[in-house]
Amino acid sequence: MIDHTLPAWFEITSLSVMGAILLFDLFMVVRKPHVPSTRESALWITFYVSLSIVFGILIINVANDAGLHGTELGLQYFAGWLTEYSLSVDNIFVFLIIMAQFRVPKKMQQELLMLGIVLALVFRAIFILVGAQLLESYSWLFYIFGAYLVYVGIQQIREKDEHGSGEDNFVIAWLKKVLRVHPEWRDDDRWRVMVNGQKFFTPAILVLVSLGTIDLIFALDSIPAIFGITTSPFLVFATNIFALMGLRQLYFLLGDLIDRLHFLGHGIAVILAFIGFKLFNHALHKNELPFINNGQHIEIIPEIPTWLSLTVIIVTLIAAVVLSLLRTKREAAESAKH
Image 1: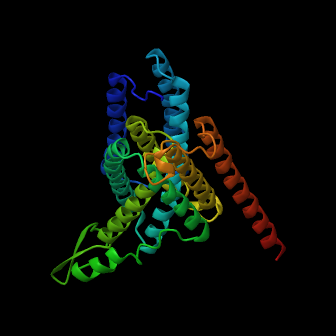
Image 2 (image 1 turned 180 degrees about the horizontal axis):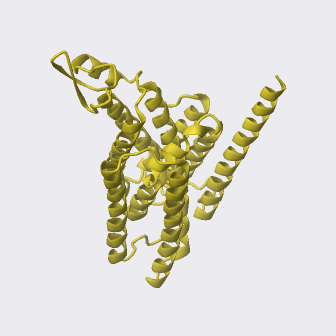
Image 3 (image 1 turned 45 degrees about the vertical axis):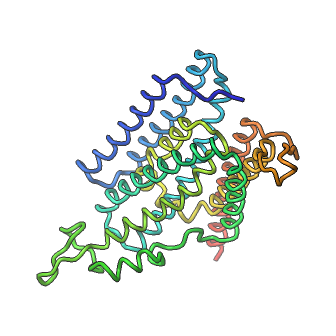
């Protein structure tokens, strides 16, 4: 059994610094709202990705100095971070669809996007705390998490539009009935607008609720996925925070790529199904249910090591991107012929 408990000073310092970085990003949006250029977005994303990689290396060194299995913990972190980051990219694509549906003005997109990221962090933090406690007490939940992820993976492959549109959301339909929402955006009003002496909400309230609903759905997918890679609450928190860093800049950078990465959703589905199978296999090895094999452990295949999980994740993501680019190139060639 791998000891996941890193030194307390390291965990506290790391979470404090990561929280400060996210708050700084939020402060920049409030103080200087603007649409970042492609160069600015690329530089910030490079910084955040580099920071994530450096942090993974730091985990290995600190764990080794503390007499822990540094390499294993580092592999768990990198596998978890890549999984959560790929899910965040998927999340971004749905955000882009919602913004387009509600015709959100460019100057409002930054603020709404940052609020959506904060909601994502809150939902994930709640599920992490609850999930960690439940898994510690009831290991049979690995069966449920595993089966759920396999189901989500299969559904995502079968359905191109996995989570539906913002305006199809039943919560949005209900809000339109109970709130006075003006259908159009006004230049000078972001959240409330005065029309003919009456106050109305702007569509921003509907967009925020749509983003929050999507955040909740993705949290339901991502938390079981990360617990399939590591059961360390600290590593789960760290991978989720780093996956959300730079999401605002990634939104504007990926805006033109939404129609090009055709197979990214399929790749993420394969990763989720793989982790689901890994969770189910782990549950069989740790079986505590008396009605399954009389409560005895079941070994269909050996437990899947972390290095293999990391390899599957990397290869799947590379294959999804390469196949997407090949399809885009083929479609461009066919279009040129016509």
